Image (cartoon, one colour):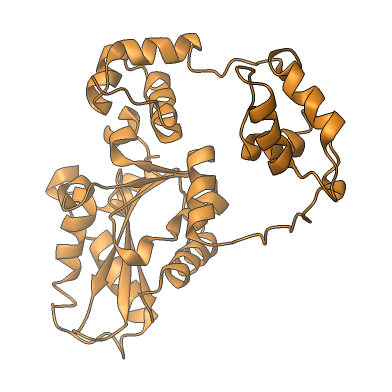
Length: 303
């Protein structure tokens, strides 16, 4: 039988689902793992046990202190000689010795080592951004979206998508729809770059004082960096599953209405923002059978 340890991502998903009120068995079924794994995780069995290395590797550590010399006997040489001289005694790899030094578990000064330790350059990019999101739970799969958002009982939970224009043109239109009131906002985007799109959406939300409690988007490349905007707004960003546009049903339906004004294949190069504002106003003023033939503005005023 193949055994796998819980990844950090799985642990985050377990914590969120349990916090939302799911039972351990339902969480296990949702994530495709056994419920006993979740039970052991919550009891803390997956926590690393602390080992007193000074007791377990007493002879090995004493040998390092007695024989290490940065000019003639490096860490590698000491480990090699110890293995030959003390058969059967416990020892660790050279890499683990350096880990002990970095973690200050043994007191060999780093500046007296044989090789100078170069500081790693701090990298920036999407990987570091993803790790931050994983740790702070900013970007989550749509399967972890809470039940109360599904009920559409409060405004502020937004769905965001892009409407493309003429083929081979960079211009696009970003549509933002409130899941509760179906209120629509349209933004003219000159490019489809991820950081440009994230910054454009963030500035538009702040400028127009749009209430935001959560954001749901698809997996389009233009939304790859939208987690940055979500982090600045202090909300969660939920990513839909691939090829599951129905998970943003309000957005897709509203985009179909926008296409009445901006048909497919139309160039957006000369489309000004003021024209998009007029379109959004007309759609928000449109009576809807869903709301008993009230419009989005009237529904929004009730909250």
